[in-house]
Length: 120
Image (cartoon, rainbow, N blue to C red; front, side, top):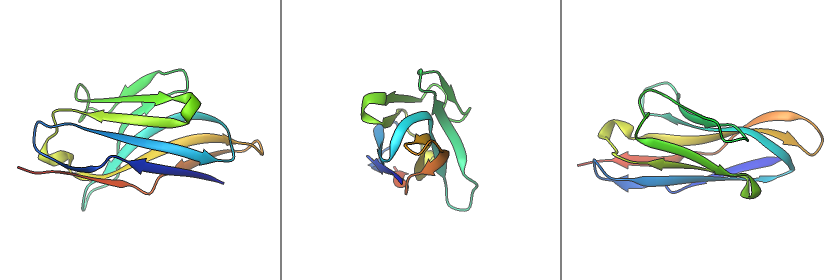
């Protein structure tokens, strides 16, 4: 019913920047909270940042001060600006959205993930 498609991943050098985008489409009435997570090889999925529909943000300690989450409600899109990248930021990055669909259900959706690799 709802699809999330991430883009913007790739290679970066330490200290560099990348911006990720995640666009939602489908039977959307309204998107409530949106967020970004990541999962490094052999590790559990980690919450990076969340943003409410009103724009209130929250960050995980590992990215606070370096990453910025934002969204465009009219485009059903969430962004993650990543600055001062470190090799330990290498992971598969996922977006998440809590969506109220057109049939009045509230469901949690995930994107397919986009790889970010930080190397020197």
